[in-house]
Length: 400
Image (tube, rainbow, N blue to C red; front, side):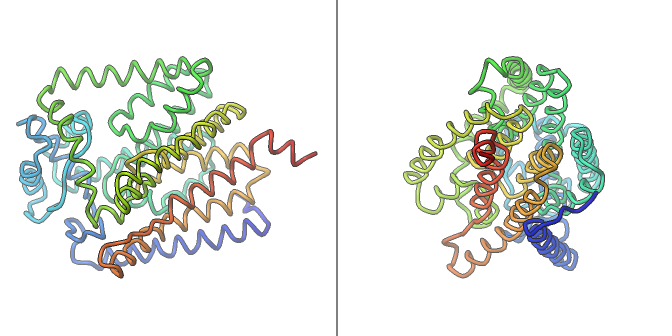
């Protein structure tokens, strides 16, 4: 893979190098810490921090579904799986019951065995999806150094696997199988916040994306129905738990990991300001999504994934792994713009790794408030720059 030339490319390479250096320091700090697996540091995440929660939730789902969202039951199951009463002592399960159901085969496995299985599947799906999109192997090698992707894999989260599913959905769409493309997005009902951008993109143009919408609706409805009828107590408990999500997020350790613009504003200045922010974002985002109709479907899909990270009310730092999909699409589809793209990628990678560091620093300096997150603003700038680069109306206007 030839490295693009130009000032933007050089700036991007420097930014990527700094981001990877910070990632290396992060790894070194973690490897030399005393809590590699069962971290109790609110500013850090340990190995298997989330896959262990999913395993514990699967165990509860099999034994006492009505207690799936009971923190005491979760901590007890976590202690049994990890062998340590301190493991995940601040943990709580927030995902739908079907997410726990996915981990049923691992409910009796050890903590590290469960993490290894989740990581293997996640890496396989991520690399398969991006490779089938057309990303070169050398480019793929760099993805494992992207800070959010590393954090997702270290935690045993489902983000990398979800990223692979998004990429495979685009592959099916490209191959002339829109219903299957939509069905894959429907599978993201286990992590519904990951489908927000794509769902809005398709909903605003139902004539063009009717079959994708049909596939997504059929698949998600089938999964929801199966869950509701098979685990009714857990389903009711999940609905009741939704009212507790925002109070749970009003916690310093969680806030420093939160890359969501809407929720970040809510926690910093109150829910009223958050409502106003969300309203303003919607007024801006709907015309933006409508403008995607002018673009090729793959490009529109890529922008929808990126914009979904801005408009979703729940987004954590490792969820930025999803940006690997639009990054791959733009790199493959617009080779003439790779110098500029490399500069933009450097900006986003550096913001992703520094945002958490700056948030931790400001939280400590100001005794918990304010927590400054630069990542959402960097992503907005990146989306704006990429949109100007590929929008045919703007390109033609500049050419004349």
